[in-house]
Length: 331
Image (cartoon, rainbow, N blue to C red; front, side, top):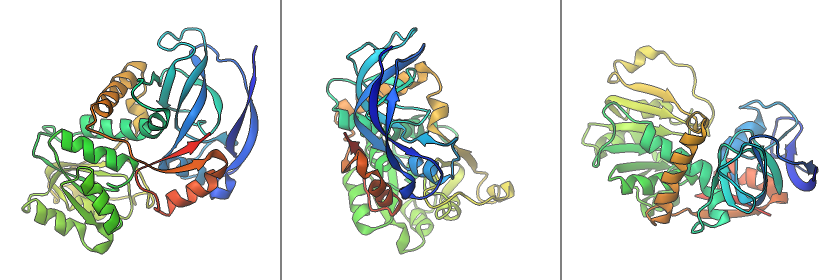
């Protein structure tokens, strides 16, 4: 058995960024269905904040992080789609990517095309696969066609900038919301047809104005508490409210009875990890993501880089909404 040492970020209890501690760990050989990966870059995501804070409770202590890219160092029994030396990237449960080396399940690890760098791979897997399942799999009644309006909150974030570009490639008319005029400009530069600073007033009224009073077919919402009520007023009859995050806090309980008078609308709460539960679905979604990135129609914007040991500051900046696009931890 060959073991290696690795720097890693652990939390021993839920709380603020100060709970993120740099430690040395020993990493052994992969078991059946597992691989050992040496990371070249690690992605930062808002789900990491939820897990650190306890909004998504974890069994402690735990090593955080949900995506990364690197090279396969060892392959366990039964793994056939990866070999030692392969470039690879993933978004995967269980958490643990905040490190130099880890052993993990192989089913959600994909070969990274040569035309995509390690940093781009680390930055795009969780966010890009999220955009993929939203725009391709989380659809209103009758689906989406070119020319349809959609509303996407946090449009200047990592998922949002990918979704803006991908929606444009699909011919969708994406209305993005952000928290500042500067972020609105960024969303527009990346394919949003319209952008609204939701801190400046009633975004629902603006959405109705932009759509000629009809509303949008679907709202994609990772903000949660702060945008929920107005979002329901943006949706056309029989449209879809798709919640996939809680950046401003969880949505308060509500009565399903309100959905009828608002247009018999549908509500769903989505998570990536249901969509990538099998090797086959993970690979199909990743292939779609790789193709759109390699085509140049979607570019991955890495706007922030932090050293692994500076992860506390990375979390501070992410929670304070000072970041745009994607963030990576460098090794």
